[in-house]
Image (cartoon, rainbow, N blue to C red):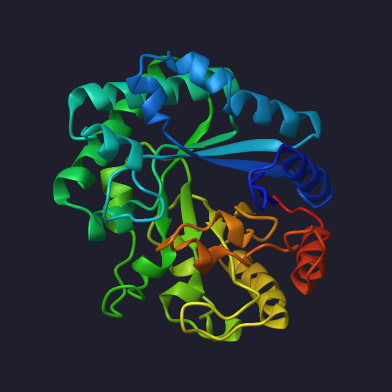
Length: 319
């Protein structure tokens, strides 16, 4: 169980304070990293990029005794119908073999320098398939499989995954018909575990108690692989036309624990331990939809959901 180090706003002191708080209620931490396309296109070696960014944070986590998980995000994490903003700005695309090679170099550097316990090679693949041009999805398939083969040839021992979007798999974001994850399992045959991205309130679920008992388990039955939630949550305020509250968020944490048990999930992560400060929102950004997923507010004051999380974390670990 754990979080990422994303602070309420860009501030090293807040980042360190957040990590210091959540390390007491976590046994792992996650980094959700976009490929540093601008740096790589500028000729900065992948090893240098990783040493100046991911490696230091991973070392901080390990210094606190936390296991390290990394998801590499290939496209635009806030708009899956698009490629990464840095690539778009440069007029480049992951459909190019040269860009795919930069990605492979970066992934190999992350794997060999950071040596994460689990390494995700792409995020929300089913949402990319549903929203982006087919050429972009096919490029993700090609580059992730090539990178996985390179990692295997290099002796990397990290457990590999891609993540799928649970609400898309259930049809909540496109028609209501269950879609499943069979295509993702076939297209990414190298995965050792299946990552889940889960924001039920964005998929039309209005109350945590309305989530079906097999919300995660149904996906898990499509594969013999273990599953882990690598991002997700429930807001403590009403957003996107839905109704919520701090109490509802706390109920979600408890409800999610039961869903994880039903799927025999091996891990769960929230990307945000803290709420996000409104000052970081750009006009038209969808970040406000995720602003109050934190278990503490922007000043690191606890919300009721923190107590619910602590209760789950206090349960004895049963492998």
